[in-house]
Image (cartoon, each protein chain N blue to C red):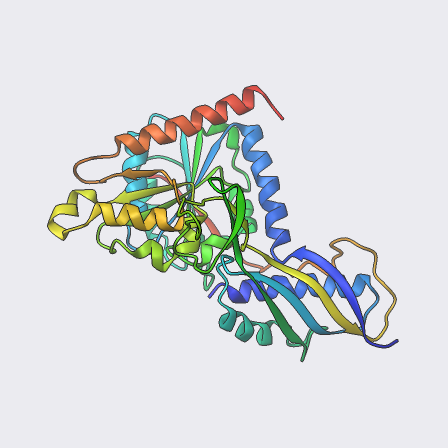
Length: 225
Length: 145
């Protein structure tokens, strides 16, 4: 038979998207709110989580992805929270099936909140839905105010931007107004919170935001789909 | 370089669709690629050659249709095409335009195929979809210290 055309009209990542939808249902049924943290390497994801786990009055668990080492998981496990490391080998992002396997035998209903610390990378994680309730992108004061303009896709797909290391803002000459403008150029209206894991302004705004997300998830479980 | 993961998914979807249609070979894959998809065209082209090796797509051509960024301007009550992905504002009235209507696409529209085999039933069959799982587990729990 000669050459012909086959219509497909399907998303390339439909398998990941389908699995993410299943995970989302599972999170929802368990009443756990899931936060996917993305940023460049070194912007403070692990520090933010360490201090969050100490201060947050919710039952938390963490999945952390890196190409190699269990250093981050070891740091985070000191809090006493259940932590699982995903070593991705050469993969520069987490995919839904990696998260599913990492969750294996965890009873999600034992947790109020699950943090997924993605691989440090401002490009690749943007394409993969992990079934999370919110994708949070970190921007540290040491990175430069125009980072969002250089990596627009990940900022555009985020639900919240967190400015980290704000205690260093003055000494670094960090221009907060310019950073906020950059964020809003690529994603108008994106909420932005200021944080510092080690000094002022602390994590209060971030912790309040997390509690509000958890309260929403609790409402969800009271009114199942 | 997540394009290799994307190319691998693309090959699996194309092979499965071709098998369901009873085709023996895929000669062209027509991909719709949004400017906000986060995929770098050159990297995808490179990864495509690697991912198609030894598959029904060996030697095939990847034909990319760029899908522009279209947003909704609530002030103009109209869709607007943007020529940049770093300034989400209406080109007419300058209002912020967070509402993306198109530009995130990463989808196969159709395939050019040839040859004939017995069609496979639709669905993610083992032959068409599943890759073997590695014998090792990349996951380890870290106990609290």
